[in-house]
Length: 372
Image (cartoon, rainbow, N blue to C red; front, top):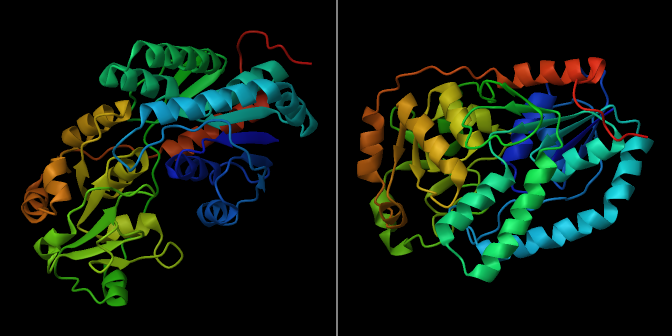
């Protein structure tokens, strides 16, 4: 049995993990330990068997929308979860042993690595950053008062120590920090090979396939501050999306995952408009679709993503002020002229799956575990 912990922060990490898990030998039983809903996991795994044991052990970051983090609120929730994890670590260790776990995989839950070490079970971390690194950068940016800084330092040190308990770190590109585990191996980007279905998408949504079509993709958090009175600036733009930003519902034609999977949508449009996150950026690079993206300076990961998009050539960062004023048109015209200079390796899902299979069958070398 592999027990696979997935962070409760959004769906992006679940997308990466399911892309990898879908390629792991189906004869290997897997239990997913996450708060991600079953319908989402089933949709992504497309028939790959798994068990679901819902639980949350981390919170990632909390904030009002996709581009902002509330440091105080994030720390309060992280402290609550750390205290709760301390109370239930023995119970979680016993739960792992009772399930006959031979390997723990985490994306990017630090507590999972500590539990695995305590249970004497090898562990693999899948990551391009750690929450310790994200929090550390946020504190440096925000310069909070001394009391909040001390609280943040305690949380960061606790997470850093848990990440250090892991056996193997598989980095999956766009790395902003990799301070974790006893061994590290670099993997290519993890992304799906989307199928171009432009004519079908245009026909289903009443669009002209001869004109540019853009996918608006801001994630579950959305974005505050859009100026609805500026909507005429988007007139005649062909926009589609899975969740339209508040105020733009009439302009963004809806898509649904069942009839138009995300990977296919990315491969069928001329550009993606939204936040730069791991999954969105990896998918754009995988299918060669340009991306107009917002700055997210509070997120340490954003700087690695921004550098990668600029090197690739198909990314263009729009100032937040222009984005909120819906002054997208001149930026989209510039985006269309961007020259893609690289074709990146996006076989990370297969490579990670082989590493996980090998660890499940052969174990991982490393320091002696506590174990039973």
